[in-house]
Length: 379
Image 1 (spheres, rainbow, N blue to C red):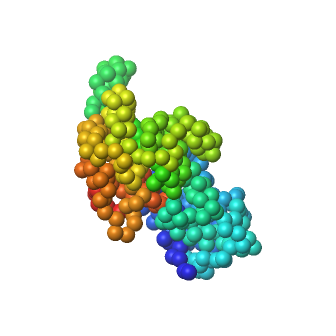
Image 2 (cartoon, one colour):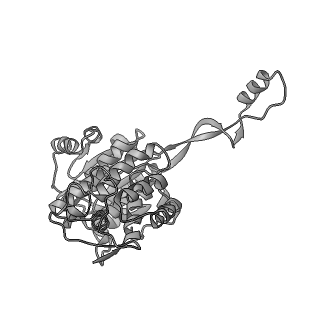
Image 3 (cartoon, rainbow, N blue to C red):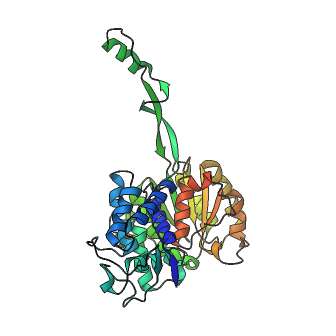
C-alpha cells in the first residue's frame, strides 16, 4: 500500500507537538521544503532537517530525540545510509521480518525508516482496543514522549518586558541612576502560567481495553506539568504520587497496587460528588481544566451525575470529556450517564487512539478551542 510521505512527516510533526515541541504549520512547511532540497532517502537527512527546522530551542532537543526514536524506529541516527525510498517523497509499506524492529539502520534491516514511519502514522489512528502486542509496545514508546499542559492564564505577577505598562519603580530607579537625565521608560507585563489539569480516569470493566493507554497518557502528563490524576470506578483514588515515578512501568505497577477497584462497576455521580466535597472545594478544581476519561456508563443515579457535573462546571475553568466510544460509527450519547453529563461539558472528544489523545492535548492547552472545538467535533 502506497503512503504519502508528506502525510507521514506531518504526522511526525503532530507527535512532536503532542510532546511539547512548538512545531507549528510554518515550521512544518520549512521542514518539508528542506527535505525536498535534501535527500529524503537518507534517514540522517530526515533527522537533521527536522531538528534544525522543527525545534525552537534547547528544551525541544530532548523531546525531539525521544519522538524521532519512537516514530522512526529508535536507535542512534545512522550515517549517510540510504533507505529504500523512491524519489519525490513516495514511500511503500514493506513487509518486515519482525512486527516492530528495535532499531532501523538501513535497507539491510528489511524495513526502511519511512516504511516504519508510515506504520506509525497508521498506528496513530488505530483503536487501542484492537492493537496487537507489538503495536502496544510501540504505542507505549510514543505515549512516553507525550506532554500535557493546561491553557495559559495571566497571573498577578509581572516581569520586565519590551512592551506593556510602564513600570514606575524601575523607571524611577533608572532616572536616579542617570542623575535625572532622560531615560527610556521601563515596562513590565503580566506573566503567564499554565492552568492546573485534573484527570479523572475511568478504570471500570467497560474501560479495561483503554485503561492502560489512558494511564500512560496520565503518567506523561504528571511528569510534564501541573497535573493531578484520580481513578474512578467504584471508588475514588488519587494516584498522582504513584504516577510521578520516572519509569512508566514502575509507575503503573504502583497504581495497580493502589487502586482497589480495577474492572469493577461505575458510580460516576457518587465519585464526582466525593471528589468535589474533598478536593474541589479546597481549590484543586477551581479554575482548573478537568478532563473526564470515561465511556459514560453509570450504574448509579444519572440525575446525581448531572447535578454534580453542573457543580463541577461552576468551579472549573473548563470541563472536557474524552469518550473512547465516541469514534465508533453511529455513536450517539444515549447512555443515561453520558446524556446527563453532556450539558455541563465544554468539549466532548474521542479518546480511543493516539491521534485522539493528541487532539485532547490540544483542547486542554486551548489550541483546538481557539479553532472552534465544540461538543460535537471529531479529532
